Image (tube, rainbow, N blue to C red):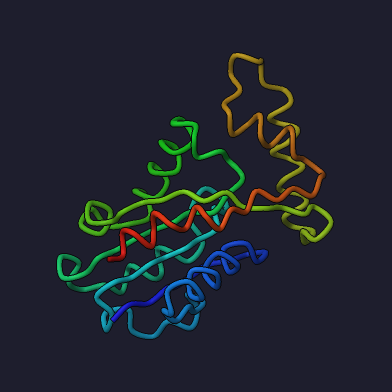
Length: 175
């Protein structure tokens, strides 16, 4: 059996999960509602990049018992451009910190671009983004990564990089 699990803070990861569910006929559910991940042999996790990690991923995969008997597909959702290798390397490093070695080594990792609307952020997240923005602006140009530049360019705006065609490699991998 297959399942799509998502961890979404402001809805973009959920949008991707729901679209993948429509395209594949596989049930999608919030990670907070997942009771037994071990009853599935294919687990697709779509999670928002949030505070240096993937929202809900650690909690979901801490419950897995027999990793080798499962196909694990992880898709992160964030603003950073996945075409930039430094971005994907940073994301992979953060994923590795959240997962056991056996889950990380068996996972197929994909990167999706998300969206942000600063007007819909809660006070805590607005404050956090403001602090990150100020810190990013103080960096010298040669210290700014593509991810930092993306933060600076999009700060305070409403941007949407959602691309449902980016789900096609995930669908291919599920076969």
